[in-house]
Amino acid sequence: MAHKQLHVAMLASPGAGHLLPILLLGHRLATHHNLRVTVLAVTATASHSLSQLITSLTTHNHLSVIQIPAADVSGVAPPDAQVILQLCVMMRETIPAIRTTISALDSRPHVLVGDIFAIESCVIAEELGIPKYVFVTGNAWFTALFTYSPVLDKLVVGEYVDQKEPLEIPGCKPVRPEDVTDPLPNRYDETYNVYLDYAVRVTLADGLLINTWEDLEPQSLDALRTNEILRSVVKYKPVYTVGPVNKRYEPELVVLKDGVIEWLDKQPNRSVIYVSFGSGGTMSAEQIKELAWGLELSRQRFVWVVRPPTGHRPDGSFFSDGQSDATFDYLPEGFLTRNKHVGFVVPSWAPQMEILNHTSVAGFLTHCGWNSVLESLTSGVPMIAWPLYAEQKMNAAMLTEELKVAMRPEVSPTEKVVDREQIARMVMNLVEGEEGKAMKMKVDILKDGTDKAISENGSSYLSIYNGNRWIRGIITHGTT
Image (cartoon, rainbow, N blue to C red; front, side, top):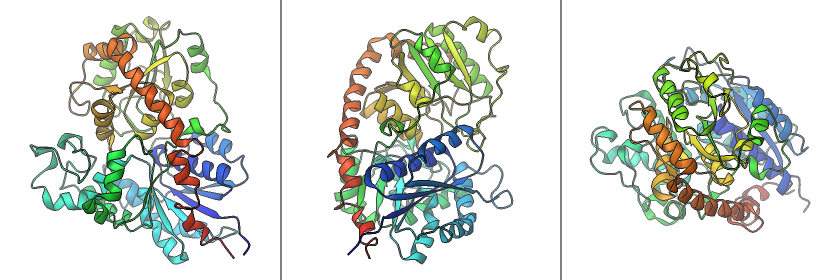
């Protein structure tokens, strides 16, 4: 029996939070397991940084990326719809283009792997008679809540945020009502029903790949695999850890160098706070000004990736093209001049992985998107958790209460403006305080664990590469 080169098709919905980890996992499968990987990237906007990454990744001849323009959903989804609903509708309307693209490939894929928002495209895998897997780009705790949500829908009376007790997830750490994922807080929004529908659809896949590792979330992973209630919810499908998936573990990638790295080269060791709210996070004009004053009052060095205010919508830049207003006229008057020797302000985008790996960086003020969390953990950088949307409040709770590698504002940034004095205290404490030093020790231990998980014979290495694991499902379809 001769073996063909196994062909994996990976489908990513728009947004760096989904596309980036799928690109990197595809690169890992191509470079370390000799699989042929085709990433089908549904894109809603053009991004120079994304184009650079794709060019760098596709230097390996076993990995190719095909960009598929997202369908125009302006006449289908309400313009003010939550990002989750827009993504679901966008991916559903793009299915014909995805099907056409897969049909035009020079060889039929042996398996289809997609993110949560691509789950409706599993119908294409069924048409081809090939296995279908869901790559959860979040963590296992989120996966447990997400898949259990249809059960909670029947158990919870009234709105989630009005519950007096934490929400129980079988076998897992409970979730406080105020920390639940979007769109659970509003059961009367159309997005809520779509969310529940997708939670059921995900369990129809042949297995779940999660961007986490065994030692980080042993309780949630054990529950997904052994708790009878949760196992029945996921329909007894196998759960595999493949994380951490991020750029630190893809050494073939081109290292980006620009002005901010040159500036960091001149700063003392562990003296800089890095501030960024991801590719989609935005804040009100009032909060931006309080953050600016907080950084200034802290008297700490900083790198701040800043975007103009976009109303009060925390995900206002999700579908933007990565461009920004570099005039910074929304910052406090004189801020740039007063802080020109201690701060570096960047419009819209910066090479985050390179910044976090820099020896001058002491901490990260982050929106707690899972990609950013993993980049911080794998770089050994403690955090200030500033969650904005999606599952970020759950991530913040994990970082502050369970892992103890982050601190958090006293009030939720999406509910109330965090004042400058509190911001200054957190930044000072993280960079030079005792709490920051304690978190640094804990995050260094976690960093060692991430290195072991992805190293040869580590838990995620075996889960990805061992033929007795999920790849066996591909191999059985890849023989002639």
